[in-house]
Length: 374
Image 1 (cartoon, rainbow, N blue to C red):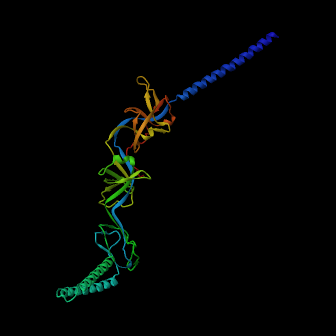
Image 2 (image 1 turned 180 degrees about the horizontal axis):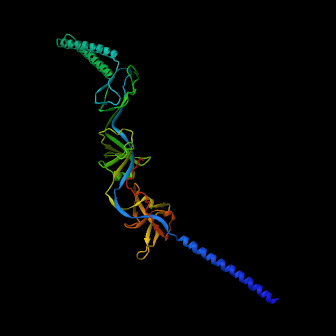
Image 3 (image 1 turned 90 degrees about the vertical axis):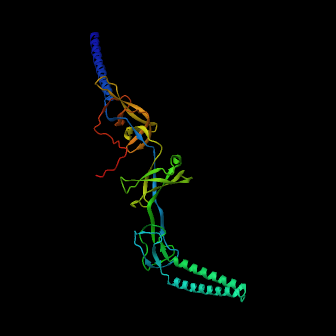
C-alpha cells in the first residue's frame, strides 16, 4: 500500500513539474517575442537639417482703395436732357458728363441780368447827378444797394444753372451709367461712379507691436487672388497716428502703381512687409515638428553602429520654433545644422527605438508653394 502511494505521488509530481516547466518555457518565449516586437525597427523618412536665410516679415490683410473715388450726383432735381458719356469711359477733369433741362432757369437769368443792367444804368446816372449836386447821397446809396442786390441775384441764378450740369471732378474711369435720357432725377441720385485707379491705395491693419518696425517709405508686396503668381510692389505712404482702442491695431496705407488698371477698389489683398535684416536659421519641413501643449519636439536619428553596419535609433528633442514660410519652419533652438531629423512617421517613435530611413516618399519642403492646376 505504501509503495503504491509513493509511486502515485511521484507520478503526480512529475506531471505537475512538467506542466510548470512547460508554462515557464511558453512565458519565456512570449516575453522574448514581445521584447523583440518592442524593438522592431520603425520605417521613417529623414533629412539633414540645413540653414538658410530668413527675412523677417509681417503679414497682413488689406483692401484696395482708389486714390480718388466718388459717386457722382447733382445737387438739384431735374429731367435728364443730355448724356455725354458711356459706361467705362476714361474722362478728364472738367469734362461735361450730363445736363438737366434748364430753359426756365436760363430765362430767369436773362430777366435778372436785365434788372442788373438797369440798376447799373441808374447808378451811373446817379453818380453824374451827384457831382452836379442834383440828388442827395441817400438816393445814390439806395441805388448802389439795388445794383449790388441785382448782381448777387444774377450770381445765384448762374450757380443754379451750373448745378444743372455734371462735370468730372478729376481724371478717372467711369463706372456703369445708372440713368437714362428723359429720366427725372431727384437731388442726390447717383449717376455713375468715378475712380482714379493709377496709383491705387491698399489699406491694412497691423498690431501695435509692429509700429516700431515700420516707417513711411518701407516697401510692401501685395498679392491678389484674381492674379495668382503676380506680386504688386509699392511703398508705405501713411501711418495712422492713432491706435484703435478696440483692437489695438494701427491702420497703414501703402500706394501701389497700377498702370494697367488691373487693380480695382474693394479687392482683397494679402500684404507682406520686410522688417529688419535677414538671419541665417536652421530650416526644417513643418511636418518634422510635433506641436504639443507641453512643447514642440522633433526626433533626431543617431547612428550607434560601428564601422559599416549602422544602428539607427530615434532621439526625442524639444525645440524652439520661429516663423514659418510655405512648407518650412525656422528652428531657433534644439537642432543644429547637419543633424538628421525625422520628417514623417514620428507617431510610431519614442526614445531609443530603432529606425530604418526610407526617403522614397518625402514631405514637401517648399518655401513658396504654389497651387498647380491639373
